[in-house]
Length: 175
Image (cartoon, rainbow, N blue to C red; front, side, top):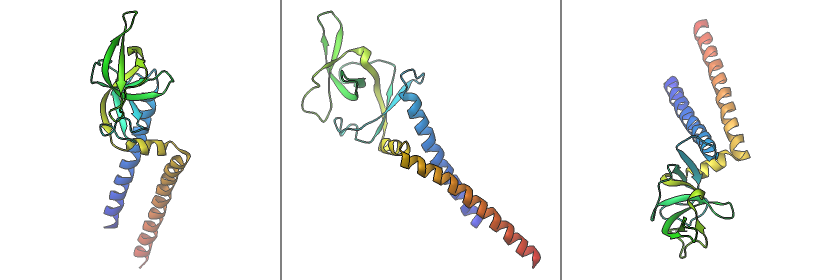
């Protein structure tokens, strides 16, 4: 019975740990400007797109560059911040180029600037609710400390388990 519980514990522990590490690595690789992945991931830190996209969500944006009015895009604003808003209108500039007027679903007014297509990083693909909070935490000092502690605790508990099994076996053989 204890062996079955240990197997279940090991499965759950490793599944959760590997999932967190995989999401962290994918998020790190996709955040690089030279990433070859067909998507990029971003962590939402404001409520400007609620209820469509909530604060703390992890969003994936396709980098296929196909977008138009009513498309939710992630782009770099003139100050260099990464923003995810909806295109509400296109505007032709004096030089003939097209730029987008964007607005957060939860904002009353459109953004005070236009966004050229070259600043668009991707189009909204899907969201994983609240995973952004976990990824931010995992990358923090405390998160790294906890992951290392979990690994160490798992190895120590496995070692203690094996020693107890050996001792129990020796006691059973000695009787």
